[in-house]
Amino acid sequence: MVNIEEVKTKKQQKIFVQFQLDLYKDCPYFVPPIVSDELKIFNPKKNANFDDCEAVYYLAYKDGKVVGRIAGILQKASNAKTGKKLVRFSRVDFVDDIEVSKALFEAVEKWAKSKKMEAVHGPLGFNDLEREGLLIEGFDQMSTFEENYYYPYYKEHLDKLGYTKDVDWLEYKIFIPDKIDERIGRISEKVAQRYGLREVKFKSKSKMIDQYKDQIFRLINDCYGPLYGVVEINEKLQAQFVGQFKLAVNTRYLCLVVNAEDKLVGFGLAFPNFSNSIKKMNGRLFNPHIFGLLRELKHPKICDFALFAVDQEYRDKGVTSFIFNKILNNFIEDKIEYCESLLQLEDNVTIMNQFNSYDRQFHKRRRCYIKQLTKTVNNSAQSRKKKRPTKRNNYTKKQS
Image (cartoon, rainbow, N blue to C red):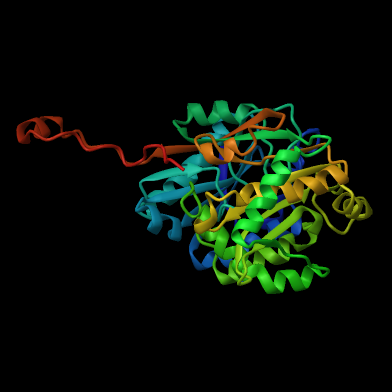
C-alpha cells in the first residue's frame, strides 16, 4: 500500500529534495539541480513565484520507505493569460511502480479539483526558466544543468495514467565550425552599419548587469511571452534570477546590441556547460569540486544556448545573425566543441531555421503532458436540435 504525505516540515522538505538525488545516484546521465536553490522553493520569502502561485508538495511512502515525490503548482498568471484552468505538476520522481505514480498523480489531481481547475499538465516549473519537459528520447545523452533527466519508464507511467501529449520540445547539438563563413561576417557588419547598431563592451559583469538587466528582461518578456507555459518575469523574480545565474555568466558568451540611442535591441546568452562539475558536487556548492566548476565556467569545452531575444522592430533585419556571429567568434577562439540548443518547441520554425547552416545533431525530445479532469458534456443531441457545431476542445496544441 502507498501512503501519500503532504510536505509541511523542514525535515520533509529536505527528504523531498534528497529523493531525486538518491533515485539517480547511479545514473551517468543525470545532472542535479543546486540543492540550496531547491530548498528555497518552499519558502515564500525566498521564492518570488509565490506572488502569482500556490503550490503543494507530496511524498509517497511504501513499506516505510520514500518511493516518490511530486509538486502541484497553480500558476495564476499563466491561467489569466491563457484563460485556461490548469494546474502544473512539477518535480515529479518515482520508482518503477505504477501503484506509486498513480497515487502521486491522484494527489495532485485531487488538489487541482479542490481549486476548481479543469486539467493538469507538466512537468513544468513555476516559470519558463525552471526545468521543464519529460524526457522521452535521448536517454543515453548527458543532461544539461538547465534540464532534468528522467528514466525511460516515466513515459510508460504517464501513458497508463491517462496523460497525453500537449507539446514537445527538441534539443540539438550544434557543432562549432573551424572558422566563420566570411559571407556571414560581412552581412553581419552591414546590418550593424545600416541600422546604427553596436555591441556593448564591458569590463565589469556586475556593472553590465546593473545597467542593462531591466532592458534584458523587457526583451525576454516581449519575445518569450507568447510561447507555451511562459509567464512574465516581474521585478522580484528578476532579482531572484540574477542572483541564481550571475555566477554562470561568462561574458565572452554574452552579446548585447544597442542602437544609436543606447537602447538594447537584442541580446544572446550562452552558458558554459558545467554539468560534469555539478554532477561531481551532487548539487552542493560547498564541495571540494567547486574549483572544477570555476574552471569549467572560465574555460568550457561545451556551452548551452540559453536565451536569444530581439526587439520587435529589428527582428527581420538580421540582428539575430549579428548576435550569433559575435558569440560564435568567441566559441571558435575558445575551441568550444559544440553547443546544446536546450529546448526548442517543435513547431518554432523561426528558431529552428537559425541553425540550418550549421552541422547539428538532434539528440533529445521532451514532452509536456496534459490530462483533463472534467469530462466533456455530450451535447450532441441538443446540438443537432439547435443545428450548431460541436464546441471545440479548449486544450488543442498551442502554436508558438
